[in-house]
Length: 80
Image (cartoon, rainbow, N blue to C red; front, top):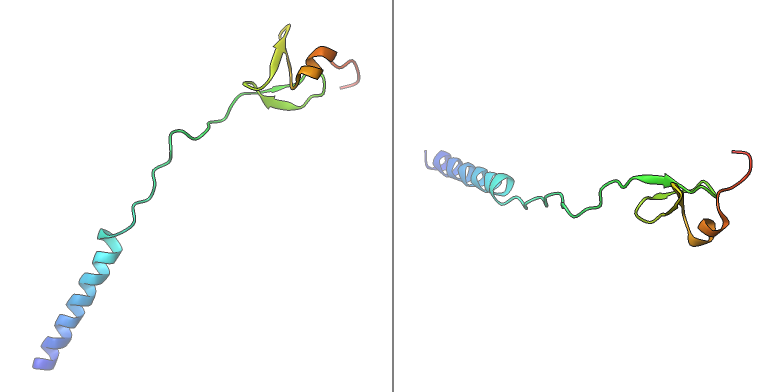
């Protein structure tokens, strides 16, 4: 009867350790950070057609450009 009691308590201790590691001392998962960048609206360059975020684009006469050089050159006059 003493061996059964010893095995029972060993099993209870191992189960308690397993439950402790499994549920109680789990490392907390980091919450999704709110300062991550969200999708920005994209605009198309009137000269070359490259899409850039609106916050980085330059506008003139309701047209968007990807760089100062393309803004100075104006819209592309070709087949598109």
